[in-house]
Length: 524
Image 1: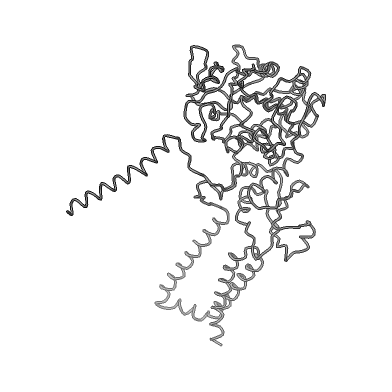
Image 2: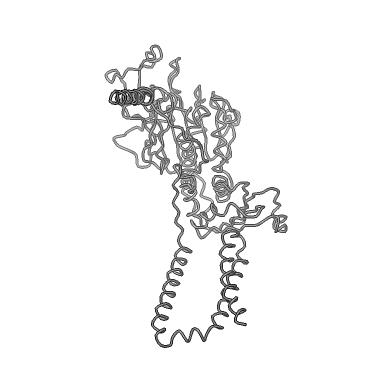
């Protein structure tokens, strides 16, 4: 009998250890490890009751002192363990030591999740012994109590699989406010993009104006903008092409109008339609390229439209003598832009590159109109840059020369400018909590930065998407976006590369050779 009772204590220990092991191996089976833990506790309690005589004897005579000390020590350790578990269950602290913070949620994801106003349920359908997605998705749950995640093993729960028509694994079904979205990957970019679409509901419509030599959003070669158009879809935009002269109007569902690098000016009726669209709370992204070798002046109609919004389009070419362009293997005619404090550049501190750019400058008025548009810089070039006005000489010689006495403007030079003003003629917002309607315009001195030629640069893609979201009054989507892990090669200027070459292939070998000669001479 004593032998059987003694086995009870060991059985209780085994059950508790099995519950702990199952908790880490199969976290998707909480009912099983909870039952094992409860069974272990009951068995251990029965063993303690069966040993009541030995426990009572420990409190007699000299053993009382040592027994009380032991009990106190055990209670203290148990109290510490309970406190640690209580704190750990309510606090979640992780340290991501990777160079690109690959295991941390991006700023955009954190912003979207923490600002949720209604519950979001994520059902994760997977197949296999364990789900590999719990670690990442638990971060979403920790950020907001509005997020709950359920894990469904499709092989063990065919009813749920058929109910949601699951055809592949993994599949994530996100439900919010009687709407649902799906993602076929548990990567942060896929989950966050699905969450953005779910919250925003109906996609915003962005039209690319065509008919004047603008960039085509459906073309995949270098001048095209299909990469920009594809990236807009992840921020819940739909894109389409628009020939204003054929359509005869700006579509009613247009959220943003994009005029990307026109080779010729818009017609007067087209400009009138754009003005009428802006008065009703429209949004415009105007990208005007610098003069080419034909030295054609800026399009007069678009230049006049920019002036109405407090922006001067310069007839010049920005030259950047800072040497930063060497970081991306470019020269001084590719100015490197740095962000200026603005809602578009909130939490954005990356360099951007503009292959051939002209100046766009906010017009300073001595008596600013309180109801007029407010223009401000968004991106500007380095202090070592300047706006070259003698464009013919620059194209003829290929050697830029800074000459402020002949009209050149000293840097930093504005490359991107944003302007906004209230839109009293705009329709009333659909919901009371929607932002007040505004007319917004962003003007850039280059369009190639958003084309396939340069959109692949991280700073360029982030800036272009931030501009689109600011224009659409989606400031909550302006943040650092999720990025896939990628190779990060070391980039060096020509001087740095030369220093590395001489140091590693000449100086260090020469020092080693001289040291060998010194040792040989001393031994000799």
